[in-house]
Length: 72
Image 1: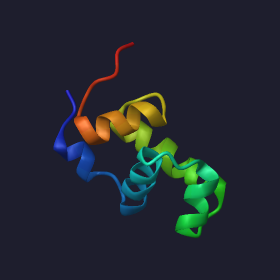
Image 2 (image 1 turned 30 degrees about the horizontal axis):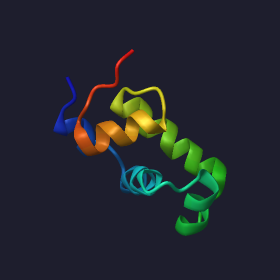
Image 3 (image 1 turned 60 degrees about the horizontal axis):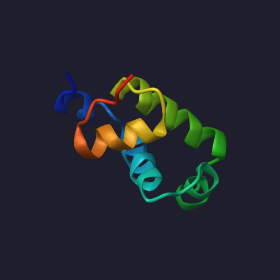
Image 4 (image 1 turned 90 degrees about the horizontal axis):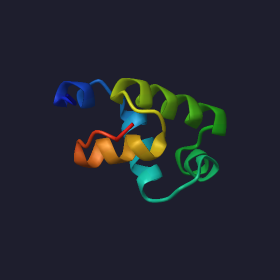
């Protein structure tokens, strides 16, 4: 089951990337907003997905905001 501890393991950058993804921003838009490269944004998303144990950004956003478990 998803825990708050997992959420606390996210870095501030990972939190921000997920929040911006939830607003519908693309990786390029997130990169521009945060002053990063698109590849760094992808790295943060991939890392957050691993920590949240989800396969993609959509599932990461769902888990981040609702603590829901995506169906397989």
